[in-house]
Amino acid sequence: MRKQIKFEDSSILRNKWQYPNHRTEIQKQLLTEQNNLCAYTETYLGRTDKKEIEHFDPSIKHTPDDGYNNWFLVKAQWNNEKGSIKRWLEHQNLIHPTDQKFEERVIYLEGEYICHPDDIEADNLIKFLKLNDEELTIERKNYIARRRESIEKRNTNAQMYFDELYQKEPNRVYFIRAIEEEFNIKIALAN
Image (cartoon, rainbow, N blue to C red; front, side):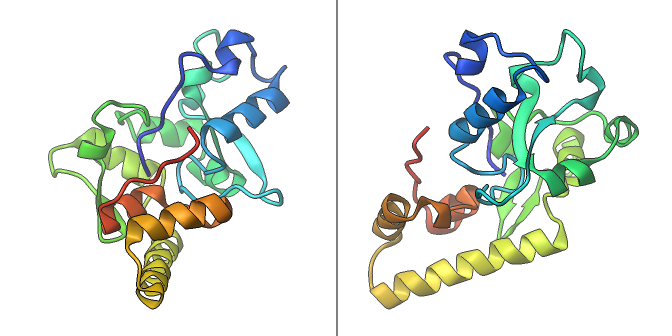
């Protein structure tokens, strides 16, 4: 997972869209802002994937405090597994996905996410969002291994490979944090 970006000029804010009245518009805008990637898993959100507007802090859903900074587009499975307000309360306190130091605190290491032993908020987030779910971790590691193989077969460098792949088939470029960390490159996403 990477730090999530919220835009001051987002259409959601400009149009004062509210959940659930403007659910469709919010969902489309979040999809664009997140480059068609699930905010939590960083997997591609395709046309056939069930997508949901996730309220990071479920305790403020349907209150005046809920809004754009609490909304993320995720795969429905992850939203369901995140669970109830009870589960939210069991994992307090946790770091917000937009925290300025997110990537310093939630550290990517060889396909998994770790944190400093004394960083309870980061550890709680990793557990709460199941960032090291066994199947997701295997999928992330296998994705990186396949990309590494493709780069070697093409006898090219990682930056050129991913730039070209993103230009031709953006749906095949996901796990952005893993790519950037593993290959020491930057992915130039649309947003």
